[in-house]
Image (cartoon, rainbow, N blue to C red; front, side, top):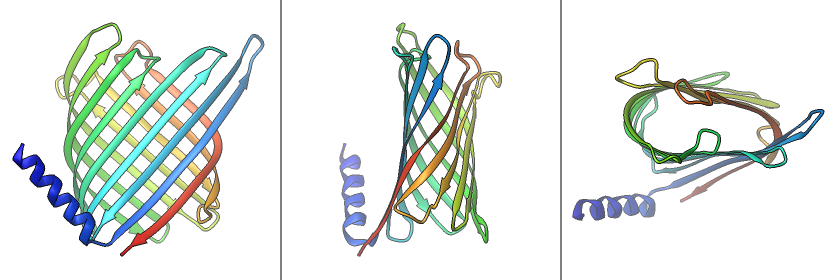
Length: 234
């Protein structure tokens, strides 16, 4: 317990005495599919928010929330991620926590925790990064079954940055360490028009595949608006 309080005090000291850069990127998008018998309405909220304290310490928070009506509620899917990292110019080390909820897959609570590292590089067209993490997964299903697994996690991310548009692609491959046929593949491809503006237009494709679940694939294509905010506090 004393060690936890010590870590909290160190983290507060970093926030208090270091320059802080806040970057907020949030978007709200939706979709409407009209069929012969019913209309399908979907709404998605995505956020990628980061807080950089000084030169090397960073906190990244990510949310992906999707609901769908037909007109009853058929999708209620949440992915919530938090990373604390030590960042250098070409590499980083991090600890990660992730919480998932899924109505479609009947997942009441899916908790992940792990550690990892990655490499990254800037180019004249944008950025690219590759990272690996070792994860522990605890899943509580709505029908009371509980599973515990160890997983690898490999993430590949590319951001193409232009004045009038930005393309971001981020995908995760997460196989079970003991069973390679049990794997998760999920990610997002996002096109942002006028990315340097405070408000912009967003097209997103989100894919979530779990090889051993009853519902293996969840995929949503949405259109909407985004909000970007950057602030440096000295």
